Image (spheres, rainbow, N blue to C red):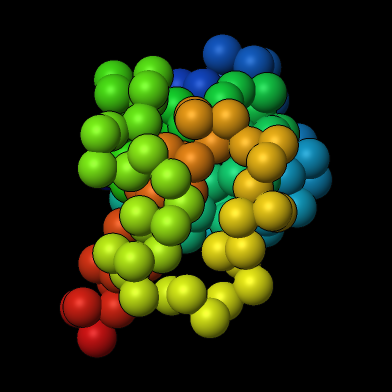
Length: 130
């Protein structure tokens, strides 16, 4: 059993949910949840973690930290090197993506931006493995 699988099972049981109930609520197959909990499948992708977090009524960031994708202990203020979206765009050379249009980011908090940064780091890490 993986650390993530063990914790997922613990959280599910704390909420008094069966695997089938969690599967129905999260929109993830019961077989997938069972495999994760029993260590027959590795840590799921962030999109699956989002679904599980919502179904368990826990924070996505907390579940992402358990999964090893990010650390929450520093999610208070952005690091000095990322004071603006332009800094992130420049670092990752993604200036042509509409996602990095600064006008679309006005409603995001510092925590939202740091969560996105962690997710982008994960994506880059996965791309480097290929």
